[in-house]
Image (cartoon, rainbow, N blue to C red; front, top):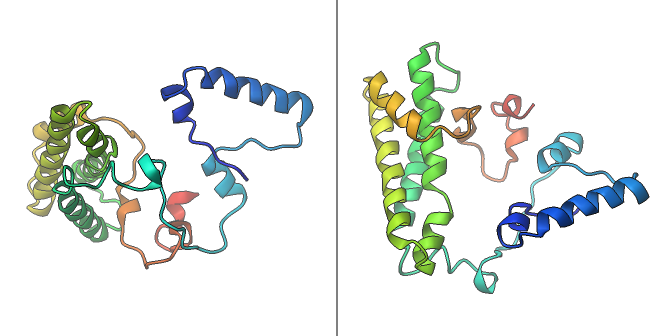
Length: 201
């Protein structure tokens, strides 16, 4: 198996989309036995049997993590880790989807905000100074919205109007399931965790 980050084909190499199209056509014509699958399709067809420890590396400058973790961005990481921990704690309390539809919406929006505040674009843009103020503002906005929703859930006082307003701003990942953030045993593949396995079928 070989995987490609297809986002880079159109982002950093505008001819890349045409290149991929031609590769697929050539495979169809000359090598039809070679399968073309998304990562999700591959995992479904060939379920992993074990977890491995992959050595640290990155596509960032120097093959390391400097563009994301450095003196300009170090303030972000404790916040990200704190939100991640809080997300898991809340998800663990609601291992079953609640019957309360408003609470369910809030849990899913909390998961969206958690993903959005974790975007690698924010520290990248801060480090490169391409859009430092914008990235800082966006990060803080997602953190604020995450905290606001988490407070509403934990205080059992969800304001539907406020939630709808936030949903209208950040409405990506329409089929998100907050339960993927439930805590799991370290080293276990999520698809093999009993409580999470149904989410991956």
